Image 1 (cartoon, helix red, strand yellow):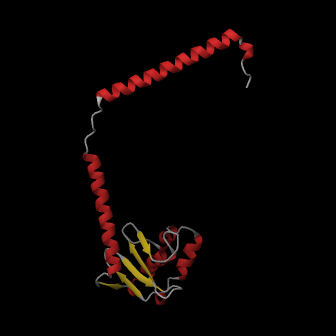
Image 2: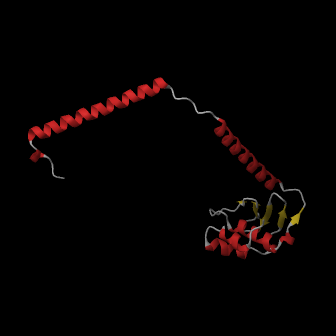
Image 3: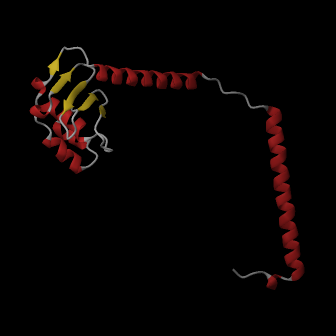
Length: 171
């Protein structure tokens, strides 16, 4: 189900990004706009010589842009989603995905498969039984440290009783 304008603007990292995105919702600023079932993409004219390549997976939504912004999603990604919501007829549909979009989608798919395999392997992996000898050795070492601590406490108390409780520091 497509997102509404308000829902898209709520994805903005800050109000300034939302405002900047609204300023880019002009089809003439986007020489390339495309859509498929799997992705939305576009090229937005920026300050550089090459337009920024923006792509969105609307299912999640997930964004990717070649702009140098550290905000996520950037104003270009938000603007592309707003354009889709407000000017869907400006998008070319039913064409082959550009290589840069296809590569991004493939890398996302590959990453999702790896995560799925990892989760599956973790769910299927049997709990390794604890080594009883190692557990006994750790328990013995722990008991030894506790006994040493008790001996030290007894020594400290005996020394302070012998020298008198008035000699204890008052901090």
